[in-house]
Length: 291
Ligand code: KIV
Image 1: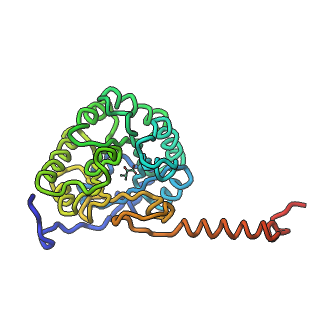
Image 2: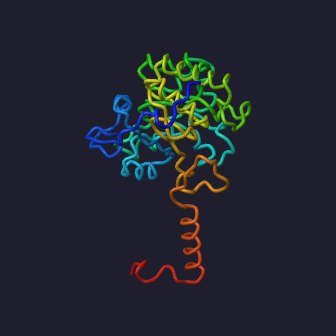
Image 3: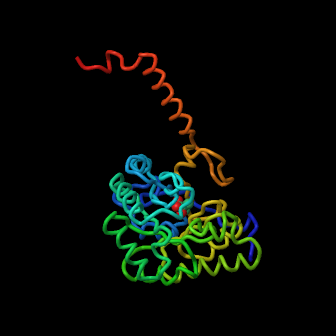
């Protein structure tokens, strides 16, 4: 693997101009063509997950250009232990809600475990549901070389695909939650996976939990944008799970999560204050009553 020194690493331009995905003036739904143009300009962009209309509307108003209705909804919204049990019906319902709550962001719907592994035709049937019934602008699926046929058929059928390599949580039962791409052989496999999804026509690729230097190399090698999570600072875009980023998930967070708020505390404190008011008879007051 070739490694560039810090001095050789290309400098990123901050997002600027009317066409910037974040902070620009695009006031229509963002498309995959906008994403491709951002890579050509060297513009970095943020992606967040969203699982419901109201939260998605907050992120949309904040200018987040791309939202992923991730199957992380399994652990972060639906109360499952992993993403494995999430169904296509559930993803369709959640994706439709996020589309309804937004008017600007590109919405990417995740294909859940079991909805595309049988082959390209099953993948097309599943992705078609997310596009037609939920209204997403693109779908995401896990796997590099192993998923390239699925990606190719979806793209040929007019469905933009975001790929996902490195740690792929739907394979937790065989892979665990471990850093991927460590060591020469694993690094070469990750590069092959990245090229395979690009060659199959993916418009972007998520790199999850891979060493920062390897993610930087993949980013330099590909002409499609890389979206990092636990992949260091040199990917084209970053994604975080919104409940982790806003401190709602609870429990121990992975090292790569930066917590920007403590919603768990804010909500817990508010719930306690309300309960105490009710128990103590101080809510409702006259101003909350009708006469
Ligand atoms: O399901 C999800 O939220 C994801 C992101 C972590 C990339 O796949």
